Length: 146
Image (cartoon, one colour):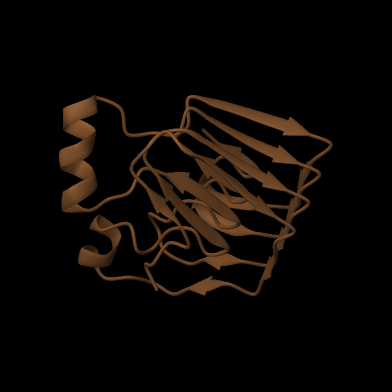
């Protein structure tokens, strides 16, 4: 819980191909976990400081972030929230991915407070031959919150 599959502090492009992620569940969290971002990204959470993120040929479905402040039931893409990356962010004045691209992806049947399907803090978002369907947000952005 709370670990990201990839963390970068450069202008790298991160490309994840052929993911199938289902059944992720994040229970109600305590205040500390919410503050640290551990209640987010039930399906997949990518912490990436700069550069681009590409998800290609992915299926992300049936994931639940069950916290009142949760973000990204299926996919959460945001800057890394730790002391080292925060210092880096202040130094370079940028802490979010430049663009996020979903190519041939499906995000469906995911639940969170914000961005039931996808939650992103990126500067740009591109969907190519991708679908977000039947996702629920108890707050805002049932399919997508950006």
